[in-house]
Image 1: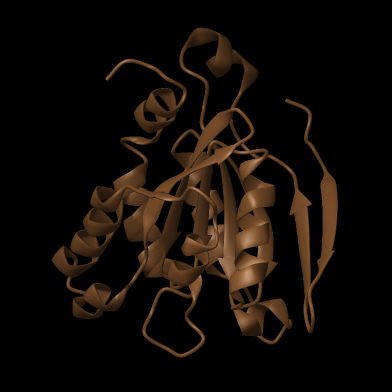
Image 2 (image 1 turned 120 degrees about the vertical axis):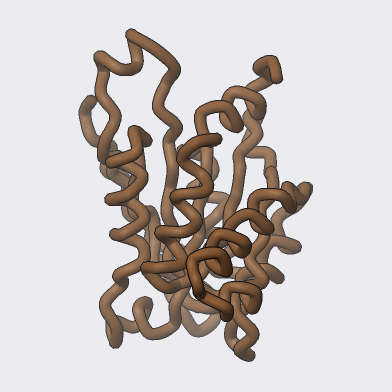
Length: 198
């Protein structure tokens, strides 16, 4: 599949959001032989990573695991912990993806605003079972603090399509838990979003 490279630069009052697209994974043979591999856009939400003060480890880890699991995945953006920036990044990514996975900003800190940014997405409809399953997997794996995640999951509309949005913790371990929950159901979920049978 030819890669798609498209850059967006969006200005906000005191910050800049840069989105760079390029799908990784999936194969043409797989598309012809069976269900289309879900397209997943990964957005990292972190003030420090956005400013270049800390390496983004969770976004690349999510892409790696998703591709290994058979998805077409891209690291779509690194944005600051800012409701408007997050909402715009999700909307832009949703125009090109079946699933938008965000990492970071789900905790209890004063700058953790990812769950609130979902309210800024017009028509966001909750899919609470996914967020609950991600938290449960973390707790079952011995990470008691997984219950502190306020991550959400839901559906938004992008043009005529419906897109799944899932918030995950910003740690690589939290991302691994989330991807482990999502991989077995993503193809079915995307099919349902497109009007497929249950």
